[in-house]
Amino acid sequence: MADTLSIQGADATYPMIVRPGALVDDLPRFVAGHGFTRVVVVTNITLAPLYGEGLVGRLPGGHLIVLPDGEEYKTLATVETIYTRLLEEDADRSTLVVALGGGVIGDMAGFAAATFMRGVALVQAPTSLLAMVDSSIGGKVGVDLPQGKNLVGAFKDPLAVFADTSVLATLPDVELRCGLAEMLKHALIGDPPLLDHLLARGIEPAEAIIRRAAAVKVGIVAEDRLERGPRAFLNLGHTFGHAIEKVSSYQWKHGQAVAVGLVAAARLSAHHGLCSPELPEQIERVIESSKLPTRCPGLDPVQLWNAMQHDKKRQDGTLRFVLLEGIGRPAIAKDVTRDEVIDILKELTIV
Ligand SMILES: NC(=O)c1ccc[n+]([C@@H]2O[C@H](COP(=O)([O-])OP(=O)(O)OC[C@H]3O[C@@H](n4cnc5c(N)ncnc54)[C@H](O)[C@@H]3O)[C@@H](O)[C@H]2O)c1
Ligand SMILES: [Zn+2]
Image (tube, rainbow, N blue to C red; front, side):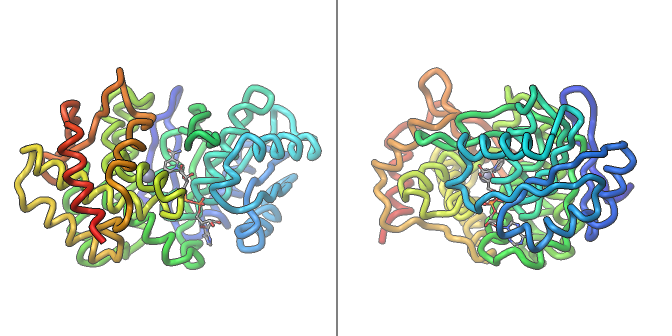
């Protein structure tokens, strides 16, 4: 079907349906078609009244688990609450868990589904733009530890992903822009014409453009499910972005930090002699016109550098930067020096 992408999982491919109404029509039909008689929808307090309660009413044997809203709750303690609530609802190995929410709920409910009774069936129902184009794809689930983000996790393929684009109507504008930052990243690593489209028309028409941005990740995951090679390209802008999040004590949202990270990666690419000096200017224009930040004034370059040293993507003690040889041509650089990075950070942190 034109509105369905096929995602490569560990054992089989699974469908991702991107369509307005997917939560009303497709998901209930899928659940009934698979014969599930007990379904637990995991969501948060913001989304429960908007979409959770309605969805549960359309599912056979549906129950709702409502969690607090926010990255600060993406912890093992909240996962334990999910286990407890699952037991209260008499969940067993034949129960289906539906993760209804943004990336926080997707990661956390997905991790609970991966581990409860050694694993129960999962469906991802992403409601944020970021979750639709990024976090619901590829099977990575997990939680944060006090020491850092996403330090505990698993690979858990859902049976299917249902992205109902009509729910984006209630997504706050700042969250929409954070999702847009990841779409720009996908365009930069794998779909140059998508970049032109985002520049000219934004994310309209949403279904087609979301599907297109999602397809970049779907393609990379198919090549490299377990993140041994090209999947690292998805981290473009993220080494810088994660450092900005950390040094700002998470005052910066992920997508906003990634936007500055994309500018930093483009500047570093030019500085490192990988691409033309025009590329960073072009990328800055795109990010600016998407109303995303291109600078992080006031943050300390040395602190940012130090924060990068704890990046989960480090290997053998060296940082690997995803850089660009051009639009649509990502490359990994292992020989970037501290001085080069500090120079770029100084440019971007001037008040
Ligand atoms: N697993 C992966 O591969 C992967 C990839 C990227 C990011 N992530 C994770 O995703 C998380 C970020 O996801 P996010 O940006 O979706 O954040 P989020 O889940 O916190 O959602 C952002 C906010 O928007 C609200 N919201 C979501 N959908 C809404 C809707 N339709 N209407 C109204 N409000 C809505 C949420 O309640 C929340 O307050 C991070 O924890 C990150 O680590 C995971
Ligand atoms: Zn990201």
